[in-house]
Every structure is written in structure tokens, then in C-alpha cells.
Amino acid sequence: MKKISDNSRRKFIINSTLGTASLTLGFSGVSALFEGCSTPTHLMGGSFVTGFDQQPLPYDYTALEDVIDAKTMEIHYSKHAAAYSKALKEAVSAEGIQSETAVENILAKISKYSAKMRNNAGGHYNHELFWKSMRPKSVANKPSGKLLEAIEKQFSSFEVFKTQMTDAGTKRFGSGWAWLYIDNEKNLKIGSTPNQDNPLMDLSEIKGFPLLGLDVWEHAYYLKYQNKRADYINNWWNLVNWDYIQKRYESIS
Image 1 (spheres, one colour):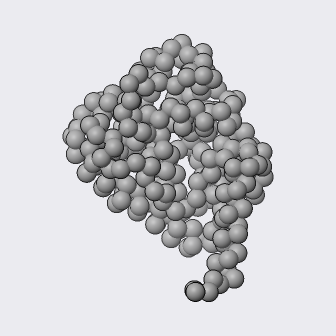
Image 2 (image 1 turned 30 degrees about the vertical axis):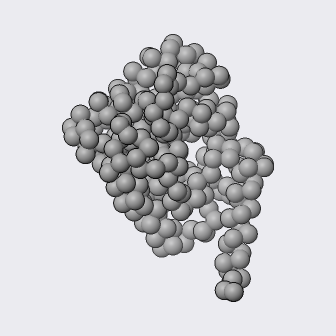
């Protein structure tokens, strides 16, 4: 039997504690673990804590056909997203960050770190959220409950919300993301960020807790849609996992 080193055992205990706390302590308990984090406590997202390792894709590469083809999913997940996780861990090691620190903690003070950290911490976080925010195509796909009520209150209707977020993604110049997020006053907002930035970053033009992120980098859609970003976005709405988005919303609302 392979002997486990004291250092490995210590890391396992720390990481296990973090994961258990995220499930049992809830919002206030997890936020206490983020020592030195500048993100407001109510924007930490409760149990939604992101580690440095890439998590398994929650469905097969073929599961999102015919909206996103299998080859795009395979390249996107196994090449692009995997590279962000790998480079993030390299940056974490080079810049002396403790291995048990959550990605959210880094993003909240990303201005203190290198461009490599910014690009790859953002890229890893964004993609980990993106995979979970989708599921196989379903009929009449829309939120319900408190999230739907909040969307209708803020944007007047679900259709108006979809139009505004579609516009945010379509009109994002170059590569980037469109977001539904909660701002510091717990209001629902729509915005976009360039490259791999996101609303958790202390230097982002929009700030808050991301509920739903839409990847509009060309590698997310180009094999199937070429330059027709709007077609990709319109079809992507059929994949949104509103159950997961609603859980994110309820964790801090």
C-alpha cells in the first residue's frame, strides 16, 4: 500500500474540510474560510466554491447536440478549459498562493496578481460555471420560483431579459462573456466582460456574483456556426440549466 506523506495528508484534510463546510455550513460558514477576501460576504455564493482542478464534464460530449456539436465540446473542454486549469496551478505555485485557497478568493483581489493569474483564474472559473450552467436541450426551458419572479421584476419579463442578455453577448467586441449577475445591492444585472474576466474580479467594470455566464469566444461555437454568433446564442438558450442557476440565486438571495 502506497504511503501517504504528511503533506499530502494535510492537503487532503484541508480540502475535505473546505468541501464539507461548503455543504454543511452554508453561506456564512464558507465565507469565514476566505481569509483576506475582499468580496462582500453576501456575494461569496454560499456552497458554490471553485477549486483549482478541472471537474468532470457533467454530461457526454454528444449530450448537447444539436445546439453544440460533440467535436466543439471535446476541444473546448479537453483542450481550452483544461489548459486554464493547468496554467492556473502553475501561476498559483509561482506566486506562492496556498493550495487550499478557493479561486473566488484569488479573483476578488486579482489586481494584485500577474496577467497569467488573471487570465487563467478567470478562464478556469468561467468554464467551471459554464459547464454546470448547461444540460441537454429541453422543452419550454425557463426558470421558475423566486428567480423567475426576480427576473420579471427587474427586466419586466423573461423575454426582455433574454433579449438584453443576447444583446450583451452578440455585441461584445472580440472574445469575452455575457453575464447575469447579482450586484452589491442584490439586484439582478446583465453585463459583459472581455477575455476571461468576470464580475468577481476587483478590477472588472461590472461587479457582483455571477449566476449565469455565456461564453462568446469563437472556439465555443465556430466549428458549427462560423461567424454567426447570434445563431449560436439564440440556440444556446435551449441548453440553460435553470435548476442550477436557481440554486446559485437562492444561495445568496
